[in-house]
Length: 76
Image (cartoon, rainbow, N blue to C red):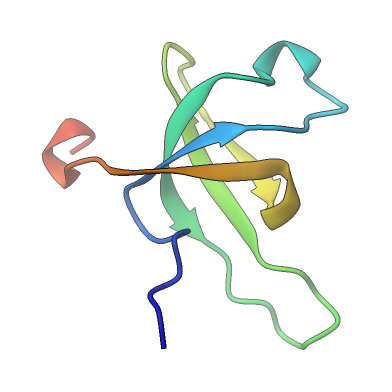
């Protein structure tokens, strides 16, 4: 079994953001992962976008892992 590439502090790139198209192509790191109450509710990832001062929630299909990890110390 391989590790999920979308984990805490994984660097990701936004590939889809209909409500914020200006974020498409920008990178950031996952700082939060939701725990859905049931299997019908999709997981959401809270991403701190570089140069943006707040977290933005994305579904899995809206972000792509870059293959790099960032450090906890980069954010806390």
